[in-house]
Length: 102
Image (cartoon, rainbow, N blue to C red):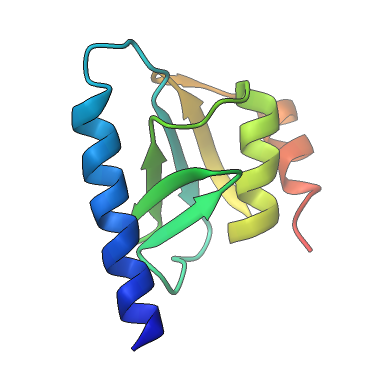
């Protein structure tokens, strides 16, 4: 029950943040994971990430691409790709992110 409540609260928060801040330009981050996470919504460094299969995205992250990538890898697992505003990280940058995987 608590998991369902947490998921609903996360989705409402995501919807509110997307509509309340729509006028501000934000960086859109997208990550493709080697394996799909078990949950659809994850809060990573106070930013809600919404996943569909092994693809996850947010426009609420407040850190730069390298720090955000590292945090996502640490929380969700090995990344196959990561981009900020459709600009993909290099293979070397992605390898550094994946060093965070536990």
